[in-house]
Image 1: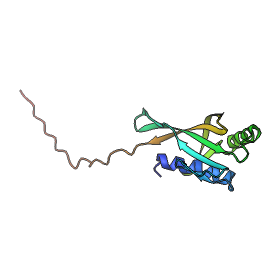
Image 2 (image 1 turned 180 degrees about the vertical axis):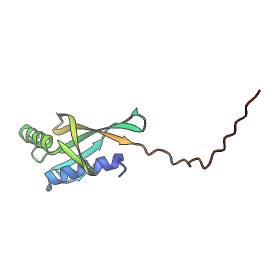
Image 3 (image 1 turned 180 degrees about the horizontal axis):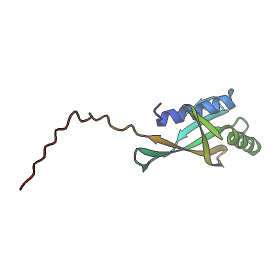
Length: 142
């Protein structure tokens, strides 16, 4: 399975759907008519760094914004605690990946929860044709 940025996004969406089945989730910006409670998930600025040979490290930083029904601090702190547990692990392919660097801020009555997933990916080596035959000749100069 090829691990793409969207595959990781969908894994975060799936983890939130499992933990909070009654709260709608959006992956695109909501401009008008916001109907709380609602999650808005956004992949921030991913990084793709070569480590060794065909191995790369991909960092996927996410912000999950939670628009609460009552917009009280108590509800925001409770949701931050629940998100910490829900996003501790995500399943990408057949493997689980740990969320790192979890933190949150409450800005303008909206919870901003940050988490990063670092994955190792391998680039497929090029499918170059193999050498067919080799003829070697040798001469001795006297």
